[in-house]
Length: 303
Image (cartoon, rainbow, N blue to C red; front, side):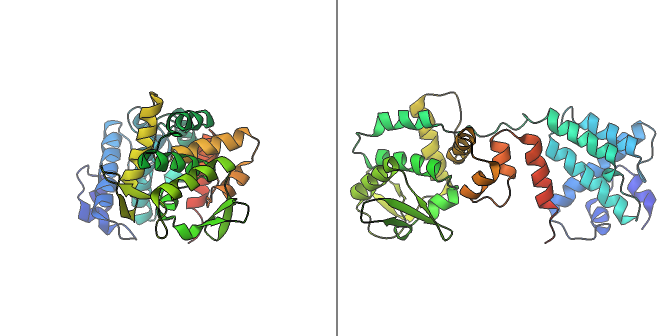
């Protein structure tokens, strides 16, 4: 393979693909190619070598990128540069301590770039209950129990969506537990009452626990989809009249913060929320740097 081809700033996708040891999608190849071409242009403007590249050149390159690009784009640029160096069996300059330190600084500087999902709080749930608890509308009854249930059990959207009546168990005293991934989670008395109200009003006897509703309050036979769950949380935002944007993750984020304030450790929260890694609980409670380290560690685990 001719190294001089890669010193041109207009390398094409097929040429770039030929240097990779793995197959990638066309979109990934386009991104890699553009990243590399941008790096070559940068090196040409600064009269430095792109292949092999020096640690200093890469550090200055990503520091310049940081002024206008997101962290994810910067990391992808480093991957693209790494691919080309590995193709020619050159030492990978993106793995030096100086470059890693520069990335770490950029990560901290950009920690507020992507605004985290706003979390629902206990006081917000109380206000929603105050507004809707006396309603007999199916939509109000359903949405109220969904907000509470997702908060209390740190439910993912998929977990809520897939819940069936078989996952709901009551004992002789009326206490309720929910089965998730072979584990049983007890509900508070308050959420149990809301769930009972939903079961009574909906007349459900089998199948999915939560369903869509049409304009006439007729229940669908299928489960909620992600769009429906998003609309349910957007409705909470409207009812609370807040200048925030809730999403399907808002209950999970809010519950994580609440548990942390109550003294639960990250690993206890991880277990309660059924996370594989502590990265996301760390992110939700504000430990951004630790979260990023956990994400990197998880990505590097052998398959």
